[in-house]
Image 1 (tube, one colour):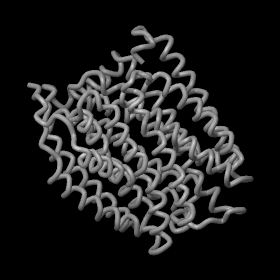
Image 2: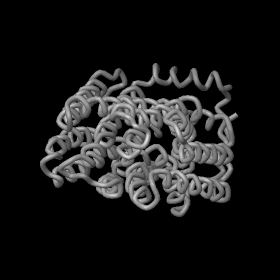
Image 3: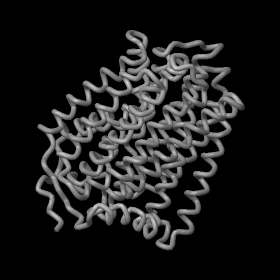
Length: 399
C-alpha cells in the first residue's frame, strides 16, 4: 500500500546535505583517474590495464544501479542509505590496503556497487520536494553529484602528492563513515512501498523500458553523454603526465576544478526544465557537447584549448543529465527508484564503455584518436535525440 509523503518539502540545509552526500558517494569511483599513471607504475600495468580500474568502478556502479537501487521502492529509505554508505566505505578500505591488482579491482568494484546510494538519495529528494521546485532541487543535487566526480580528481591528486596514491582512499572511507552517521540523524524516515517483491521490481525495470519511450530516449542520451565524459577524463591523465606537460598527480587533479566550474554553470538546467524548456536545453547541451571536442582536439598544442574544452564539455554533460532526470521524475512517482535504476544503469554502462574506448584510442591513435572517439559519440547522440523527438508515438512533447 502506498504511503502518503509525511514530510512535504525540503529545507535548504537538507538539500545541501543531500547534495554533499551524493557527491561524496559518487566521488569514490573517480579518485583513481588522476592517479592512473602512478598506479600503473606501481602495479606494472599497461595503459589498457590501468583503464580497466576505472571500468571496474563504473561496471560495479552499473550493476548496483540495476540490482540495488530498486530496493528503494521496497525498504525504508534512511536505513538503506546509511547501510549502503557504510558498505561503500568498506570497499575503499580494501582498495587502500590492496597489494595486488585483483585486490584493488575487488575493492574498486565493491565501492562502485554500493556507492549507488547516491541514486537512492536523488529520487528521495525529488519525492520530498514540492512539485514546482522539483527540477531546481534535482539540479542542485545533481550539481553536487558532478562536483563530487570532478573534485575527486583534485583532492585525490593533492593527497597523492602528500602521502601517496593510497591516502585518498583512507581519508575518503573515513568521510563516508562520518557521512553515514550524519545522514542517520538528519534524514527523515520514509517508505513508499510499490507492492512488488524483488523479482517483480527487477522485471518492472525492463517493462518500464519497453513501455516508456521517454525513458528509452533519455537513457540512450544519458549513456552517450556520460561516455563522452569518460572518454575525456580517462585518458587525460596520460596526456598531461607525458611530454610536453609532464605534470604531477597534484597538478593533473587541479583540472577537476575547471570541470567543476562547468558543472556549476549548468545548475539552472533543472529550473529551465520546470518551465517547460527541457527540449531546448537538451538540444543546446548536445550541440555544445559536440563543439567541445574541437578545442579538446588541440590539447597537445594548447593548454588553454584543453581548459576551454573541459569547461564546455562538463557544462553540456551536466545540463543534459539534469534535464533528463527532471523530465523523468514528472512521471510515475511510485516508480522513481526504478526509473532511476533504468536510466542510471544505462548512464554508467555508457561511462564504462567510454573508459574502454578512451584507453584503447589513446594507446593506438594518441590524443587525436581520443578526440575523434568523442566526436563520433556526439554525432550518434544527436541522431538518437532527433529520432526520439520525431519518432516517439506519444509525440515530441512527451520527450
